[in-house]
Amino acid sequence: MKKIGNYKFLFGLIGRNISYSFSRNFFLEKFKKESIFHADYKIFDIPKIENVSFLFKNPLLRGCNITIPYKTSIIPFLTKVVAEAKSTKSVNVIKINKNGCKVGYNTDVLGFELSFKKDIVKFPFKDLKALILGTGGVSKTVSFVLDKLKIPYKYVSRTRNNKFLSYEDINENLLEEYKIVINCTPLGTFPNNSYPLLPYQHVSSKHYFYDLVYNPSKTLFLKKAEKKGARIKNGLEMFYLQAEESWKIWNS
Image (cartoon, rainbow, N blue to C red; front, side, top):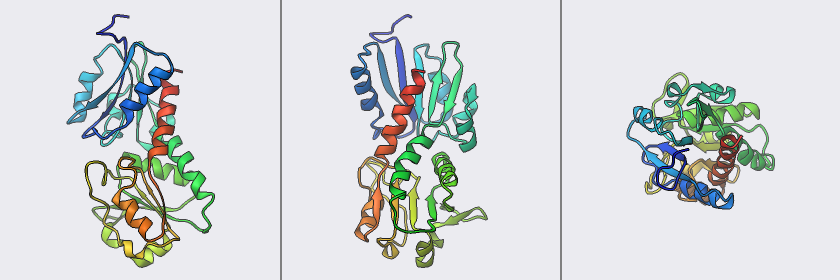
């Protein structure tokens, strides 16, 4: 295979405003451990999803991770989508075969399920229900896992409609009923210091707050919940689990 520079295999992360990502360092370290000296991993920060067509023309590209906000909008650009990714309408891994066939996968399902479930099985409260903050691609992954675990949930969006609650709907009574709160929005991602607007004064030690954001390690969303006694978790373990699964897919 013809090399460009020192590389003959290329992988990367596709998203927008993603300088915070740990993906490049993770995979460069992975290459080193596996004694792979002719591969590189790039951050492809693109302003609109249509730019992906240009990226896919690179003959060295063997696989990509996909992040916010393109996990759903990437699908029309793929040749095939496996069942789990089709069910969630969310793709976070692409494998590009030698014939140019681009296959979409969802390893977020595995990453979130393993990371989330081991905490929930130890949770002392019964009849758990969850609020999913955000309605983007990754929120469908979270709801897919909650369905599998038989945990009822409601989506929370900035705009109320017959399918979603709005942030204004969240009050003391709702938080008494819904003990799990999962942030699927990018709010709080480094260097942004924002957070979902919730009535944190009604959070207690009966709650479990999970933030899919992992940089910073403790967002304001998690800090505010922790201050009220809630159990908290960030998305770093999920990140590592889904990244390892990406690697298995690219090497299968």
